[in-house]
Image (cartoon, rainbow, N blue to C red; front, side, top):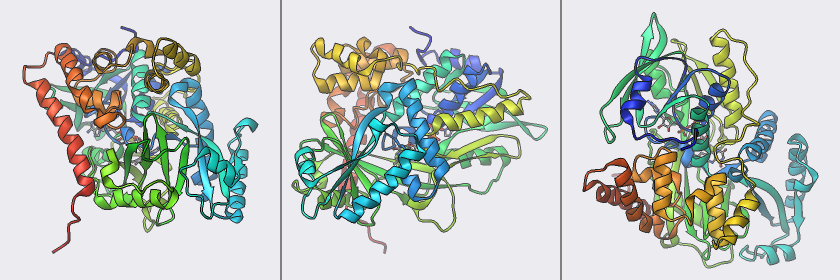
Amino acid sequence: MTSASLDFRDRSRLFGALDGQRFDLLVIGGGVTGAGVARDAAMRGLSVALVEAQDIASGTSSRSSKMIHGGLRYLAQGDIALVREAASERKMVEVIAPHLARQTPFVMPARNPAAIARLQAGLWTFEKLGGVPKDRRHQVWSPAEVAEREPAIDRSDLAGAVVYPEYLTEDARLTLANVRSAQAAGAAVASYARVEEILLENGRAAGARIVEAPEIGDRQARVFAKVIVNAAGPWVDALRVLESGAAHARLRLTKGIHLVVDRARLPVNRTVIMSAADRRSVFAVPKGDFTYIGTTDTFYEGADYWPRIEPADAAYLLAACSARFSTPALAVRDVVSAWAGVRPLVAEEGKAASDISRRDEIWTGPGGVLSIAGGKLTAYRKMAERIVDLAETALGRKPVKSRTATTPLAGGDVDVQAAEAALRAGGLSETAAQRLVGLYGSEAPAIGDGGPGVEARHAVLHEGALTLEDYWVRRSGRAWFDHRGGLDALAPAAAEMAGLLGWPPAEAARQVEACRKRHHDTLASLAAPLTTKA
Ligand SMILES: Cc1cc2nc3c(=O)[nH]c(=O)nc-3n(C[C@H](O)[C@H](O)[C@H](O)COP(=O)(O)OP(=O)(O)OC[C@H]3O[C@@H](n4cnc5c(N)ncnc54)[C@H](O)[C@@H]3O)c2cc1C
């Protein structure tokens, strides 16, 4: 076991390390925001506790489009500061975890020369603001080059395409790598540990009562801290209510869905940007043997771990594909898996869902809790830096310089090309080598040939997995990017986990069935008949 290994099996020890203890900082929420805050604070020498109600990254941080954006779209919104921040932050992720920031060209087809000129003007500004080096600047492709390089794109009325580099990540694993690094720097971490009460002393938030998720156990702990950070994503408002009894809602949630199809059905070599019926940009992204299509942006009520996908969401994305590609039209029956998530956006009255700014905001509650929401996965490190600066000030310390931009994350000390080449020399296919290095970075050799049993073992012993879903959805990504939705991996993974986690005899079968049901119910929801109001 390395110091960055997360092993959450000894629940009494985890809750014991929290109960009655006093920390400098308590972070509520193990999404990318909370994970980044815990890592930065622990690396600055604060004593830190991080508690997560479910699994690490079980909220929005496993449901994104998996892009480390340069921030081009913020240019259209005139948000220059956000463009600058996004552009510089994506470089940082590439430094600390190169396997989790994989450069990939984005192709924007255009129907007329004026559109190409407009796109180029935007990109020139963006490249200047973002300090994009010469070899990473955009190119323009002629229609013939588009035909040769992306033959699936419909060529009628095509004036060419503008192509520029962006980065793809593995959102849940980026979050996990931050949690592991936080723990290695000294943070006490517990998953399946929900804050159910904020403990007040003389009107000041002094700690929290934590209750174990019932599917795992029935432990409780009272943990104390000088500063509390609420990084509960879509649940930020619910935590603010716990702090003050009542609090007016600060968040506006919007839902985004993604559909996954076999790459053979939508054969793209790079990410292709399409225009949806309402002129929003949506993407088709190649990933191994699959292509994923996303995303939607519609108002959503209620912070759900599994937001419901409506047939209209799927129809919107499929129609955008039909309009852009000349390959046979995609239908719901082509979708092999799908996911949805909710964006915890800061409410802006009167704005359409996709016009609401992606900026983050920090509020200090009446009890002193620092709540943070909004923002993007891309900027998580910078958001963390800002909030830890505030926490240090609240602790009466002069903020220490953050070291998170230069210290590798768990698995991040890797030369991606060399690691992939080594796995291929060992007999793995290019796709398998890319998948393993993309998920595990420098730890890929420990996974061998990437069989589900070995992966599940690693997930339990080093990555804090406690349920089959933790492995299937957030550690291995098989729920969305494997043949038959990764259903074949469930039984061998469950058998391995049952031994390591001491499950009673019927538990493995019950968890396999729960994952299968999740998969089938999701696919069924895409085609469910539209309900009409009486
Ligand atoms: C469809 C979609 C696409 C996106 N695409 C991108 C993209 O491509 N690039 C990008 O940069 N950003 C993207 N984003 C935005 C990005 O995913 C989010 O900004 C980010 O993941 C939010 O992280 P978070 O940690 O704030 O929230 P979350 O990940 O939701 O984490 C909050 C955590 O708090 C926990 N919690 C809640 N209540 C409690 C409690 N009482 N006690 C303890 N824990 C609690 C939850 O279980 C959860 O794990 C996308 C978002 C969506 C929805």
